[in-house]
Amino acid sequence: MKKVIINADDFGLTEGINKGIIEAHKKGAVTSASLMTNMPSFYDAIRLAKDNPGLGVGVHLNIVRGEPVLPLGNVRTLVDKEGFFLRNIFKIIAGIYQNKIDLIELESEWVAQIERALENGMSVTHLDSEKHLHLIGPALKILKVLAKRYKISKIRAINEPMYFNKIFSNPFCIFRKCFYKTLVVNLLSNQMQGLRSTDYFYGSYEAGNMILEKYQNLFSCLEDGLTEIMCHPGYIIGEQERTLLNYNRYSLIGKRERELQALINPKFSELVKQFNISLVSYKDV
Image 1 (cartoon, one colour):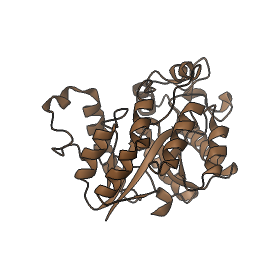
Image 2 (spheres, one colour; image 1 turned 90 degrees about the vertical axis):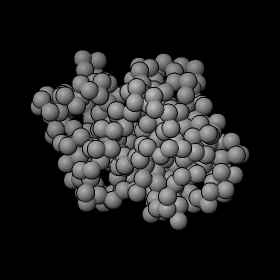
Image 3 (tube, rainbow, N blue to C red; image 1 turned 180 degrees about the vertical axis):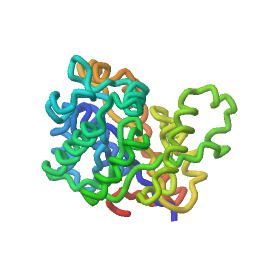
Image 4 (cartoon, one colour; image 1 turned 135 degrees about the vertical axis):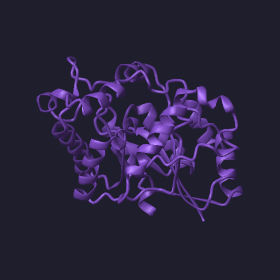
């Protein structure tokens, strides 16, 4: 049986993104969302999640963008002079391995983010992270401890088969930076023994480009088992565009609404039926 989780990342980032995620959920496409508990529209996301109990909600652990949940004095190695996370994923990874980032501070911030969701009434279905940072060795060790502590058994793994002919038939894909990012995170996911995850994952290579045609191609060659498809639907509303740029230049501005249109298109539901797919969330498995 083909079971698919359509998971929308960045829930809580802006009200426009929240609105898009909920609209796609109500249309029957998005079944799950990853909540950024340190972002300005967190409480709006909480309200919407409670109004839509069918939506599974996990925590999108984050030390990449935005401001920390903890007081700045508790996370000095995680933030810049302005009090924001460092925003550059390569700088953060280097900082972890060069001992410039204090792993105790990292763990404390992730604890605060999980507990903020729990304290606001969320039943956390899964854990993942901004820029898939939880797959980096020292961070993954912390994640395993927290998953056990909070009894959150399901974790995102980026086991993304990149070479299905119907999806990645273009040989020029090797010239795209996202090809190498996807290759690396696939290799890192091999460290996740002992953690529950999906059989397959899609969306890293095509982040920001999950249009209807991509879903059609993907659905046509899915194998039996459980698959997570990561997406980034949302509306970009006025001043919120500036917020996105301020928190991180990689914010998929201009692409979120296009991804949303694919999910709310009536043809999406037709594709689900055509390929005999059962849409589920992390809380269902």
